[in-house]
Each structure stands twice: as structure tokens, then as C-alpha cells.
Amino acid sequence: MSMVKEQKLEQLPVIRESYDLVIGGERVKSTSGETFTTYNPANGKAVAEVAKASMEDADRAVKAAREAFDFGKWKKTPVGKRARILNKIASIMRSRFNDLVQLEVLDSGKSISAAQGQVMQAIEDFEFYAGAIVGHRGNVNNVPGQFFNYTQKEPVGVCAQIIPWNYPLMMAAWKVAPAIAAGCTVILKPASLTPLTAIVLTEICHEAGVPAGVVNVVPGSGSTIGNYLVEHPHVDKVAFTGSTPIGKDIMAKASETLKRVTLELGGKSPNVVFADANMEAAVAGSVYGIFYNTGQSCEARSRLYVEESIYDEFLEKFVEKTKKLKLGDPFNEETHVGAVISRDQLETIDGYVQSAKEEGATILLGGKAAVIEGHEGGFWYEPTIITDVTQSMKVVQEEIFGPVVVISKFSNEKEAIQLANDTIFGLGSAIWTTDQARATRVANEIRAGIVMVNSPMSAFPGTPFGGYKQSGFGRELCIETLDLYTETKSVLTYFGTRPLNFFNI
Ligand code: NAP
Ligand code: MG
Image: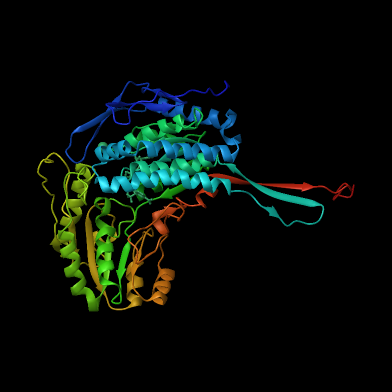
């Protein structure tokens, strides 16, 4: 094996016409010569041309990551230095904040205000893990006299990290930051619809001093190269964020080589409003909880349950506020709701709304594609409110991943808990009440990884993010994530002078 070479990537503008793969510290074209176009969902126009990784490229990336892990210096780099490099990544990102935001908006069609928050969080994730890794360590355990035992945390190895399109840069940061902090090496597979900011992040990692081969990026088809990485015998761990069906497939395939697997999957998060809630906060937080990021959030609070006695008043206010949401030019700072990611997704959303009508629900607001002046080629859907639903309807049980909320009533706390838990998912949940004892009781009963009490925010760097049930397993964004990128090694030493001859022979 050759020694891992050091090389700096030439710095290119964040926003440009074409993007390459980054493998083994170099920008490279696809071996097949293939490229694909990414589009701006807000107007349907092409944004850039991207090298499309083939299986051969994926294999090259695994080799580079394997070599960097097995023979490179990254895992032996003192944590203090690794932390400095993570902070450097964050500071380069800060210095290019506006460009990263622009690129994210162009590639995803999301509103600039949403993109600003997400790019900022991506930066803070690197800063968080720069701090967290310094305190991540093993233990000394109690053992009989003349023995000594310590554990140490060692990086799990080569990680394939497969991410979705709804938070392109933030998801890349959630994956890459803890992995490289822990000393792992990475092959990042961004979503085909939104690969650009993940590629730029990989370039920034090199600029900050991450050695060649430690972070590789291979945009390309999930069903071919994504699947190939999942099956590859030289990959030690798969970290996946995406849909539940693909998560199940990944778990099954990764079992062949017993890879470590973490899965962040879909959701259908309940939002429970009690009669004693602060009405203004609950209405504002519930509108944000579903329509933020055009409803394309895995923890979107898409099932709204409101206590009977305030149902009419709440609904009126909720509709009124939803009507005030501004759709349109994502680059306008006043825009609340950006475009839907693709035509396919637009059709999926509309299909769900049609199914609700067929099943007898009422479309109280929205319920159709929106036409935005100046953005006619884009994919837009009106913020949609559906009432008169029953628990068995598709729109109540399945993840829509768009700006669509279903609302129904409950009569008491027990029923609210039962409705909240009536789902195969268990990612987010929200409770609105001024009764602290009730908040605690209900939070204890809800089977979900995240409970928001009187809060429209679901997470900050440091708070665990992940699901119960079919929303997956493993937690990201927190200290515990580092345990999922490390193995625990137990070293047991006998330091007595008398030889231990247990067989007595
Ligand atoms: P997706 O279709 O599951 O795709 C996610 C990623 O997996 C993409 O990079 C995709 O590549 C790749 N992929 C597709 N097929 C694959 C295969 N057979 N093997 C390996 N990789 C494969 O999900 P999506 O539609 O992009 O994203 C929406 C879903 O993600 C929603 O269900 C949402 O709830 C979930 N999500 C969950 C969280 C969370 O933290 N729990 C966060 C965000 C999103 P291509 O792009 O090339 O198809
Ligand atoms: Mg795009």
C-alpha cells in the first residue's frame, strides 16, 4: 500500500457551473465520463452540471477511505488537533456563509430564511463536535485487585453516509462532523436532487486540513452506488437518512457483512394542543411546525390534535395565520414557504390530497398546486389544511413530506396520548400546554425520540435527534452520536507478580 498523500485542492468559487467528485483528496471526473444536471425547483432551470459517480468511482472512494483509515494519520491525530481542524472547517464555512446559503437556495428551492438557519446550524455542528470530541473518552472500571481495566473509544472505520434532499448541507454536517471528529473516514453520498453543498463542504474539509481520503464525496444514483456502498465489504458502517422503505432495505443488506447501521427515517409527528395552551404561541408554533421548509421535514408536525373546547377558535386562528404565509421567490427574505423539491414530489403530495377527498375528508385550505408569477417552471403547492379526518385515512397514517396538515379533535389527555401514538413512526412530537405536570405526564407517554413542549424548535447542536419505532434508530446531533462512530475496546491487564495458573498444571 502506498502512503496516503497530502494534497490541497485548488479553491474554486462556491457557486459555479460544474462540480466534480472528490476522491482521495482530488477533484476527479467520473470514470464513465457521465454527468447529470441539477435543477432549481423554484423555476425548473438548470443550476449546474455534476460528475455522476459510477460503481467504479464508488469503489475508488472506498479504497481511498480504507487506505486513509488503515494507513493514514487521521485516527492517530490527537483529538485537540482534530478539534482545531473541525473549527477551521466551521470558520471557512462562516467566511463563505452567503455563498453557501445562495447555493443551497438554488439547488433546493427553499426559502432563503430557512437556508440561512440551516447553514448556520451546519457550521455550529462542526463547532459542537470540535468541543464534544475532546471530552469523549473511555472509562476505568472496577475489577478485582491486581487487575486493571480501561476502555478506550476507537473510530469505527470507513463510513458510508447517505443523505436526503430536504436539508442538503445540514444533513451532510450531521453526518460528517461526528464521524471525522471520532477519527473515521467517510464516503458521502448526497441526494441526486441536491448534491452541490455537500460537494462544497467536502472541498472545505480539505482546505481546512483534513487529510486526503478522509472525506470523499460521490454524487450519483442511490439505487446503484448507494446500494453498492451498503454492500461493500470494506465499509464498516452505514449512516443513512431518508425514507423508511429504503432504510429497511439498507438494514437488510448491511446485515450481510454486519455493518454498523444508524437510520434516521420518516415521521408523522403529532402536535397536541391542550385547552390550557397559550393560544398565540400554539397557533404560531403549529403553523411553523408544519409549513417550515415547505413541510419537507422528517419531524414536520403533520398531525394536529386540538382539545375539543378550543377546537373552533384554534382552527379559525390557524387558518387565518396559514393564509398569511408568503410563497414565492426563495431569495426574497420575506418568503416563508419555498418550492417543493421536484415534480414527482408535487404529484405525490397532490395524490395524498386527492386520496383524502376520496376518503371523505374536507380540504379546508389549499389542496392544489400553486402558480407563482415569475416562477412558472417551478414546483409549488399551496399550504393545505385537511379536516374531518379519521385515523385510518392515508393522509393521517403516511408521511406526505409536503405542506399538508391534518387536524382533528380530542376530548381528554388519555385520548390525546392514544392518538399521538397511533402511528408506525416515532420521530417528533409537540405538546402545547401551560400545565407543567401535564406536559411531563404526556411527554413520558409519547413514544417518540423528540418531544417539543411549547416549542416550535425541535433541536439544537447538542440535543439528540432520532426516532423510535419505524422512524429508525441511533441519535444524531449530540454527544451520544460519537458512541455510534466509535467502538469500545476493553483492555484488561493483570499486574500481579504471581503467575495465574488457573489450570493448576
Ligand atoms: P430516499 O429516497 O430514501 O433517499 C435518501 C438517500 O438515499 C438519497 O441519497 C438516495 O439517492 C439514496 N438511496 C436511494 N435508494 C437507495 C438504495 N437502494 N440504497 C442506498 N441508498 C439509496 O429519501 P428522500 O426522498 O431523498 O428523502 C425524504 C425522506 O427522508 C423522508 O421520508 C424523510 O422523512 C426522510 N428524512 C428523515 C430524516 C431524519 O432525520 N429522520 C431527515 C431528513 C429526511 P438518490 O437521491 O440518488 O435517489
Ligand atoms: Mg436541485
